[in-house]
Length: 117
Length: 110
Image 1 (cartoon, each protein chain N blue to C red):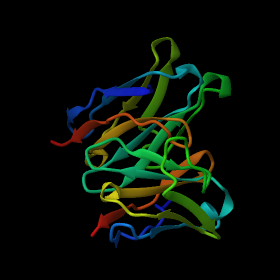
Image 2 (image 1 turned 90 degrees about the horizontal axis):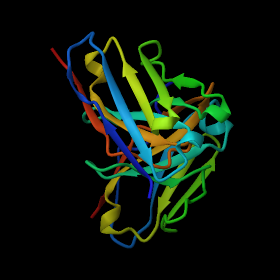
Image 3 (image 1 turned 90 degrees about the vertical axis):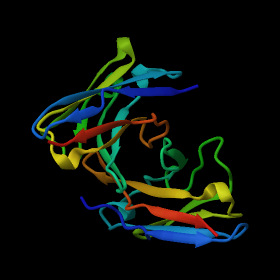
Image 4 (image 1 turned 120 degrees about the vertical axis):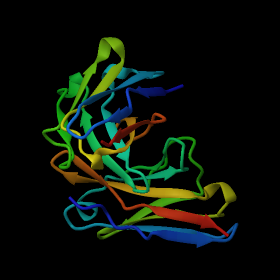
């Protein structure tokens, strides 16, 4: 059974940083493209960014609102993907989901990030 | 890149069929076959329903079907059931390795 478990969410002040983690199991993590998707309170889903598998180049891509502030990285030996979030803004407040593949086939339960002073 | 346009809400009675539209442009929905659909019950993880416009992953009920015409993709739910009450989102590849979701549609079973 595929499982994705996110952690690292919490309350942070505007301008601050936070790093989210996602540990995957039940699938070949090293072959998976890994995404982060978020949902702000009362809003819809928003694709945040993705890292390809190393065999596919391991490159990253980001949505315009987070490009230059957020970084996705991975350690296949730990079955873990991270989302480093810097220069956080109030509009980054959301539940952040770790998601496999493209299309987005397996989703974690999400972790809440609140950016507020 | 703006979100794809979906109706805010769609409703139907049990047993009926409903269709949710997802309208983009010739640069996204109209330019590829990489539209997917997701069901989201609030508080739970979203569920993958449709990929490449009309293909169902294993385990997804055949009551869910997808199609596309021009710049608009559609999700049809047939034989509507109470458990289908949820939010539904489309998602499309928009080029340059980027993806965008639709605005979301709340489905109500009357």
